[in-house]
Image (tube, rainbow, N blue to C red; front, side, top):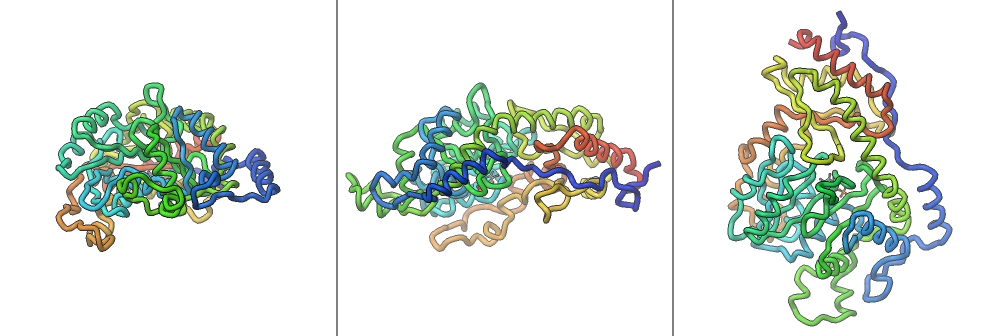
Length: 427
Ligand SMILES: *Cc1c(COP(=O)(O)O)cnc(C)c1O
């Protein structure tokens, strides 16, 4: 009988998995082209043609618009900046409540805070891990103005129900699509269903330019405000003039601009997106065909297409007879790290990130002096599904990224099977 590596046995695989690296000659040439032009950014923070950025910035944005079928794509230096600009452009502020997912990257919620609005956390649906529309409805108050919905892990949220709810209560929707670029639902791209959609181009995402992001909208007025916030709004309005004082709301600008080199890289990356998504789906299909035979694991329900930023698998402790922690620890011991991310260990995690309301910021209820979080409930227990997933059931891994060969995937499968057949060793 095989001895588990965690108990001193031989690992299923020692040799590191190949890196997920989507950068090649195409990006190299694009960077050199810009470098040789000497124009690394031509933005001007005033009312001028260069307010909109240089040739690479603008051509990247036009390509993003045509790919996603949206009227406006506004490049920004991160999805975090994009989320912040979105809340600003919607005119939200002190006294407003924004309903956000409890299970997401932290910036999905801080976007409300930076404008003085109050994040109100709603629970997730246990099949899709995205916001549960019933939970959202239970959190709506007369102060609620918007919902920030996240296509977490690359999956589709409940588009129709959320749309109906938003119309019923007159709420705006910001879609945080950082983990699901290029995924279609009913023949339309995620990120284009809400009032504003936000994408990330950071190094960990499907496609990247090191750092970067894109905000999309079909609304001309929102697009204008997003561009102002991206680039020194107050100085631009000073030069441009304004018709009514209302136009000044939240028009304190930042510098959220992408550089010419980043946009030149991003243009090449966008061309690769459809193929990269296809490969992720193919790899997950292959893994799931084997992993679904393991009785205490359940594979994610797909609500439509999926980008598999990570592959979420649920673990049933009552069926396994061991805890998720001991299973994952044993699994990780069988497998190697992945190249390129030298600092990281095996790319398998217990859950995802801690439910956001449990962060010190919300527990201590201190962000900015103008935020009044005092009557918000951020206590343990407010989002039971999120807590169950994070603390008990969910396993996420990244061992399905493009670059993983069939042999590599076979090693992943072998490790899962080896541990699941030798659970006695963990008891
Ligand atoms: C990565 C990520 C962000 C932030 O992206 P940056 O470009 O790093 O700012 C926001 N939301 C979600 C869901 C993410 O995964």
